[in-house]
Length: 394
Image (cartoon, rainbow, N blue to C red; front, side, top):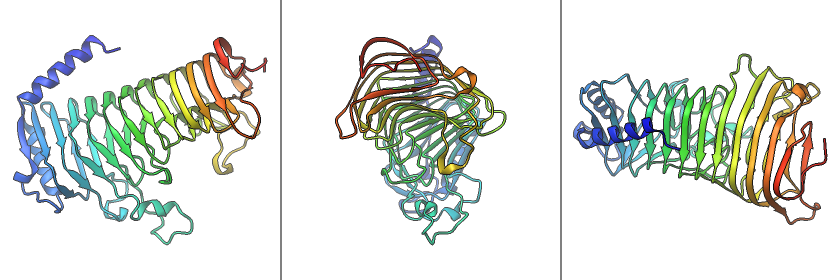
């Protein structure tokens, strides 16, 4: 539901863009197939200092980019319009350690738009660094394609992010940011290439977008509140994940995640909540997963409170992350495993509480038996049509 304030902001941004002063990087020294960091920095400095709305343009063409940070605060709204293709350095060592490839920081009223692409060329060298058999430079930091830090009241639309070395998009401490008609592209075998990771952020919307990647399509860290994901096609990838949570001291609750009208095609998971055993205290509440379609998904619906990759934890000690107020409604499609709903909740905190499941139609057609729902330390409230039937009291 779009609030009145959001509508007013959208109208304001439209008027601002129509009246914008234009800074074209090709008129500031950038040349096709050339490295454009200096031209981009120069254009941003002028745009950020402008007292009226402005537009920074990367026109059609191929441009090399080592690293850039678009840092505010700025004096007026800015549209960064990318119609060309930005190519990152093949060797991650070219970018200083701890620095990301393309970063937006402390900006309010940003529009990042266009028909272009940011290509992190992760396949060239970066992805092999995670392979123990690789001779690639160990200890190299792997960069995100797009980082947003302390960004407010902003829109990202139209562009494509391709083959990031690490996460495609990382949002930290952002407020009122919308991704609309956004495309993420990487092969299923690309390691750790989460589509959009969100941490410590509020009022984030991801809609009408396609996310094809090698890890979580959307991953949600602690401190997030009121996230809306609607009309997203996920696959390949690991699905939409809340967590993992509970590994670190001082994690903040995740409150209000709304996933609606999304499809998952040949993903490892559909919607997932994952917390560590032997964890720090935490909380996940007001999870709403509704009107979802699964096609050949390994785990369509899963709560996993013994998330322990590489045996890096003590599974015999239960997770202290409280999971409650979870609503799963109108989920249909096909699963690659018979356990189409897996609710593996912690023995602590009285298990998962107030879990509602209604109108489920998930089928499995394989040699491992009939489709079932699996419940540990949880007594779901069931409503509507259920295929397969709900769990007996756990």
